[in-house]
Image (cartoon, rainbow, N blue to C red; front, side, top):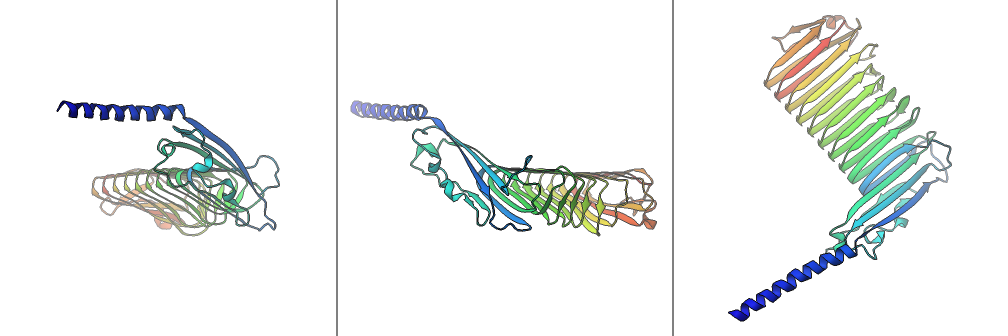
Amino acid sequence: MRNYNKALLIVAILVVGGGLGFFIYGFVAAGSIENSFNFKYEPSSPDPIEDLTFYADIGEIIFKYNTSPTTSYANIDVNIEIAGLFMEGKTYEDFFNPETEWWDNSTATFNLRTLPDAWYDPSHWFKSYSITVTVTLRTDVVYDLTALMSTGSIEMQVSDGVILNGTSLTSITGSVKLNILGNNEFRGEVRLKSSTGSIESSATKTNFSSGFRTLTSTGSLTLNYTNCHMGDNLIGTVSTGTVTFKSYNMIYSQDINLNLATSTGRIDAELYQYITMGANVTGTWETSTGSVNVIYRDNLVNTGVRFIGSTGTGSINYSGTGMIETGLGSIYSSINYGNATYRYIFSLDTSTGSINADAQSA
């Protein structure tokens, strides 16, 4: 029995000592790998619309516009930092495909892929990434942009006066931000999507000729439009999270749908209409669990608004001036709704929660 206990003690010492030595060596060999790469898109025969596509497994993709003249149609800067234990002797090629495989100038496609984790290599167990892909575009070129990030964020700032075609920004796990500074035009549809992460977009004096569509499964959605022109439907959908929508003096070139929805979360919306809207807008703003809160203002005799509230468990609360309640308190319309040239009409629906609309109309 005594020999058995001694054997167990020896094994325990070896295990503990080996484990301690493993981590000591790991810290001694700790460090970081830092690399920078640059790619330039220079088409042999430029097209009226340049299609650019970006894929990345991890990191952040940032789109911005040039502030000084450049001959390149796109300038792509990649900064990589990989840090952790057991990094001694490692290069970025232990974690990523070689940089010669990232950019294909003939197809204008960027593809940054991580290598599968090697279970036998402890440097893969303790690593952390800091990856930034910065894409600088030209203000005088019309682009059709597609970006897909697996784990990380996408951010785009559109300079004043820029024209784009379609724009699709998708992050599977991470946020998407689109900031449009003003006097812009999107000739194709704008699509923003995130599976797990927030979506934020703001625009000023921008013409969305083909509409705007956003979708996130888990995360918040924030949309803010000032003096914008909408040429097609505007859709914002969340599975779990809050929807925040604000519009100021929108113009519509045709009758559209403006739909906002969340399964679990509230909807907060503000609409200010002090100029002629140009067409009719119909929308459904609905949540399963949460409240729908609306502030509406107009001072136009040719513009009317109607809210139709529906709640399973909760109250419907209307307030304001220039409005009238009908339909046993479920319908709230501007007094001039029947004679208005252009109309907003929204269905406000919640299964569990309240409906609150504060409206003022001429």
